[in-house]
Length: 458
Image 1 (cartoon, rainbow, N blue to C red):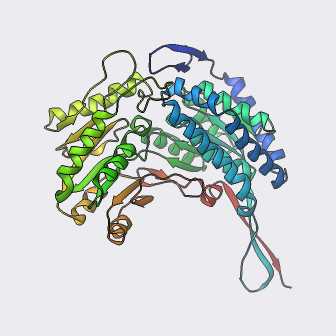
Image 2: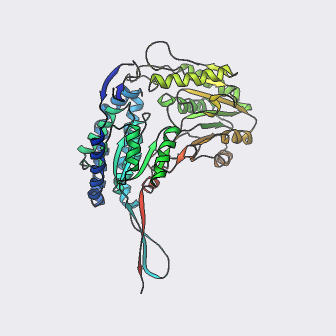
Image 3: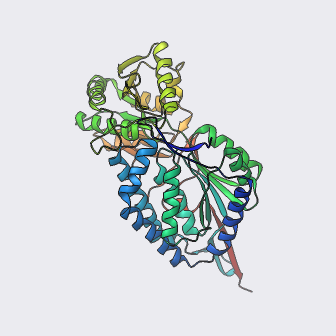
């Protein structure tokens, strides 16, 4: 049985299965991507820009079809799925517009030569290993900038998103991208390891679990290949004070429950100063209880299933572990009765370090609330994590909040907003959350040859 299959997580029904590559298919993909690079790297920047611009247009034109595909494959409510399609289109459009200027030569003011310039040049074929939680967006932020640079892409998507993966490849073709510049590959993990080791591949980008990132980084390191890794997160939502608690709670609920909580930068640890704790918890509990699960294909649904039954089982096990060791369930705590991988919106309190929920990433609609004495204690608790992706600080006093935000050991810190994603903002973390950055000019600066060309004055 193929590991690539569309299984509707709302019903458990297997919709379709897909074949993985054989050894000959792996070799063909590698050679195609390499030969494609030799051609694509010489394609005028204006033509690369035109292709990406057309990709953005097609995403907009086919938004309903694209949204329905990921709703069916990984359970994202269709309203949220359309938002992801729009964001992906915006990323391709951003690189189409700004990519040429990001690739402009940089003149250095260094004496002793007629000229010294740094050129940003492509390096070759890249392997992308992408996850299921944001099937289009994750690919866009990797493929968009690297195709603009002139690299080519071998894209291994999550085994649960094969139909969406094929749609993306089709859109690139329809936009005029050469067939060997972007290749969707249904490959096994072992085949991906072989591809990373192949001399025709020059780098690898992975968005996924810490375990997967460690395995990819190990293979890449042994073969001296550049990596970008966007891994897990246990992001904080720190409430120092609030002049409008209802608005703060609404933001917290959205930050925790969007995409059924399946986001690396979702607000997973909610840290509140003692003066505001009771009010915050009371209102957030009510907000969680008011958020009902439903059919992801229904436009009115706000909370869909988790991506798979396995994901739901793992999340409930983490909750049960915490409860068995003394945690308090404020609401939720288990699966939703009936078919599908649905988990109740759950809020935990009294979580301590010996519980899995304290240190592990909770990848689903489960939040943990903590009461702290002051900003200093909030910051210490926030930084007591192996992860460092993002975090937010909420206060009517923005200067005070900014001071706390600047003390967070994260790659992205926000004040009075959480997890904002825009094409021009860098995305990435520190510690066990990964290495490298995506989006903005930083996303075009990872897999490039920053080549010095110096002409002597003699």
